[in-house]
Image (cartoon, rainbow, N blue to C red; front, side, top):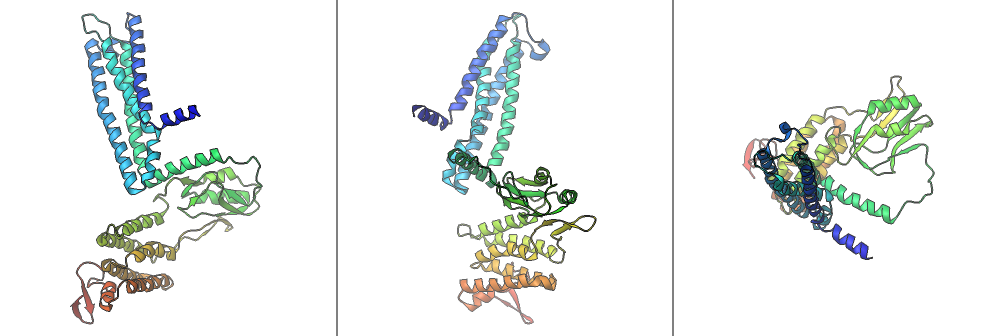
Length: 427
């Protein structure tokens, strides 16, 4: 119990690892200086180390340069903690402080600083004084290590500030605790030969369609990809369903043809772009923001993208080989899915904001005009639900009319002038 208490107390202290780096730098300095003094002849050529004055300046320069690096790391760490507290949860601070990669960066900087500082005592600038070549070369190595630690830290800090980075940080720690507290039984579960399970978790970010079709053709079967593009796949959950004989199917190769990442990307997942735009509009229409103009700008972009998509054909879910045999089924969003993704959540939040509802009404009416007949029902549904939402939020018929009537330009924002027959009237 005493050992656990000591280990737990030290693991929670942010200064332990940096202090270890400082002590290691001091010890390394004494060791390298002792080696240089034990050999009177220079161990390295002067072209590499310079004279005694050059060596003194090199050590002093490296020592003074490491101080702002340390300040940068501490500042970025504190900013990351502050942002995480404000944007996500105050309880996530503990997970950020427990991340040891920041501490190792500080340890490298501390070791470099103390090594150079204590090594300055070994420099004798008198006439004919030997140059501690091993010490100087070690200082060069530590300075390179400090630069690498800074770059790795900045990359790590940037990744950690992402939503997915913070979620993965806490989720990975939770999973480690579950694995330790509730170990998996040694009993082998029977596997279904018609199902290929995922060997790790993540979002679907790429599907090698042609390779999957060829792999299914060689195995003489057909495949159905269970998750859609962008879906999060749980480790051990079904990734593929095999239609037909699965005896000759290379399952390891099959898993590699679907790339799972820690965060969705735009490369093969256009729905993710819609998702992020909708998130911006929802945040702008939140009670703490009340920024309807930003929401209108988002609706402009959603309208533009859906207008380009409205008349275009969607790729079939079924993929066939060169002989016309069904080999792969990939589910994806259809027109109704994109319309609901773009408008459902904004419509629910936009009821009290006439500027946003006017813009939504204008976008939906314009999309109905350009969409093929078979794609108009989802838009008509959105118009009906928008009218019901506005009627629920506003009691005056004049206000309801103003909130659902686009302006003279037909875009639902800007000057509040609407067409009334052949005359213009102000709302």
